[in-house]
Length: 360
Ligand code: NAD
Ligand code: UD1
Image 1: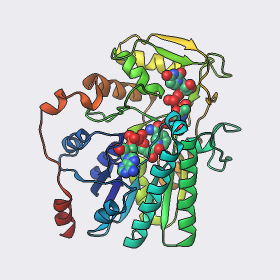
Image 2: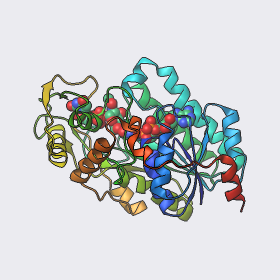
Image 3: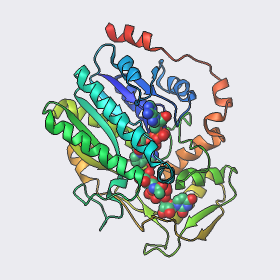
Image 4: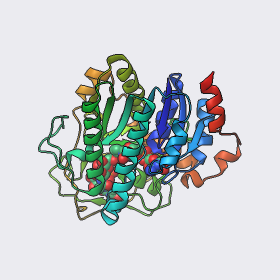
């Protein structure tokens, strides 16, 4: 299939590209690099073994969307493009509403105008807020606690309304739990700008010596060891789910909403110990007060994804830590670490070449 990958230069999108290309799909990556590096495209070329077709585009700009859809028709769109930092969304909510919600509306309008009827959408466990019970099923109450989460919920709802209005339009709404880890090559991975908000990138940066010690937010939660419990999921398992969702939409001609997680809760200290073992590095930490808005434990019931997509997570916490560490140690400064690129300069194909390929 010909697939448009919006936000494909980002953390999860880039990993999904490796799996989608591996299944023989032709990809056009669109991104505005709001939270990613052009270097990703070069790294992807090395992993995939072929040029990555790329078009710089901002989903808020209609002319950019017109340019994207001005070619042979896409069979599906995978939509990763969003701003995703919870704290940042509290400081500038309008930017999040504009980028995430308005960007999605423009994308859906462009799809509708072009007659593209399949969408895979990146939703999040954030739509469950503080769930009443775990494991969380898809029919749990939806109640988010911050502007970022509200954008995800609104996007889910407007995609749902579009599916209702047009019976031939189908969406796979994928609610990710906590994606971590990296491609086994160590060439692509998570590269947060500034101080990482999330646990795994923070731990990795402590291990590599970029940060002194981890602050563990709360040691008095009602959990196995008093620290927060989450459902960490290897990004390559998550990437595979997107290819499975595309197959589902093509095969079943119907929409779905599924959780993507392992179904297993892991505490902060369990993750720290696993990372120390995988990296052979000590991870100094101190237990501090709880982070505002945090919850004790959240993990998925992923059985619906298994039933509908035939998907289940296969990689364990050891593999997540091993691959996160390989990425971090090969790229101590993320995509700013030039040594890996200097080894192989390559090319990124243009939209023009994509059109030529797609045309025949
Ligand atoms: P990311 O920031 O690494 O990737 C998002 C990509 O979208 C970036 O490359 C960014 O430059 C691009 N982008 C943002 N706004 C854009 C716009 N207006 N036009 C074009 N490109 C734009 O984030 P990620 O971790 O890869 O997350 C991908 C998706 O998954 C997001 O929608 C996010 O909300 C969702 N999600 C992420 C997590 C997580 O923990 N990483 C968890 C649940 C859901
Ligand atoms: C975060 C997002 C959430 C998103 C989810 C999955 C926030 C507030 N929420 O939540 O919207 O859906 O990721 O990507 O960012 N921790 C520490 N020290 C740290 C960082 C984290 O102890 O420096 C702890 C947290 O308290 C938590 C666990 O580690 O118990 C995981 O935290 P994090 O990686 O931020 O994920 P979520 O809290 O699930």
